[in-house]
Image 1 (tube, helix red, strand yellow):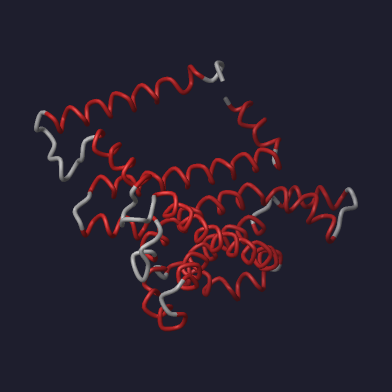
Image 2 (cartoon, rainbow, N blue to C red):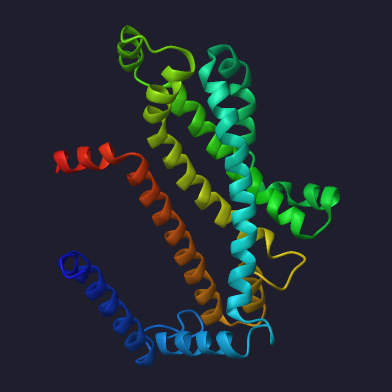
Length: 263
């Protein structure tokens, strides 16, 4: 930890300066408090959310857990479908050409534009929110898995074949490891899409969840609570993304070594 302190100290100092400037800017009238609530009010708002809740009785922990469960259900479900399907499509050029227009079209459709239709299909309950998250994550992940498999360096494949690797062994030992960096990049992109979708999906038919919290705060002009909701979404997304990065380093140790060589 002490070894990393010189690396993290500058960002922490910059953040502290920003927060102090924000607080002073509001107190001395340079910033309007209803547009930029002071840091002290955001802190008191967090205490209120932790104890009383907003709406009353629904704490910030309940909002956070509800959103986290919804995002993980849709996200994990999307990855579970997209990874094997993308591997199959990416492995066969004919399938790639046949499905490319559909993948591009579905990826281009704004996920939240499907909300009225999905409500007709599933109602305004949990399934609608999970489905929308899964839909948005699925197409992003599928595109990256297909690309990761399709664009493996052919030199690696030819070299592996000269050593007698074919079929499943070739895929397991060469194609999949070479495609993993792009697959992990797709997983991080899909995660961002999932959090964008959940904010919109939770604004309808529920009072629990960080998106619902932000909506309620807007209705009552509680901008500090809106900011708290945004911050928590950012922290959750950062934590999951950091976990994906750690898993990537574990599965792809040579990638970290290459970065060290480049530096």
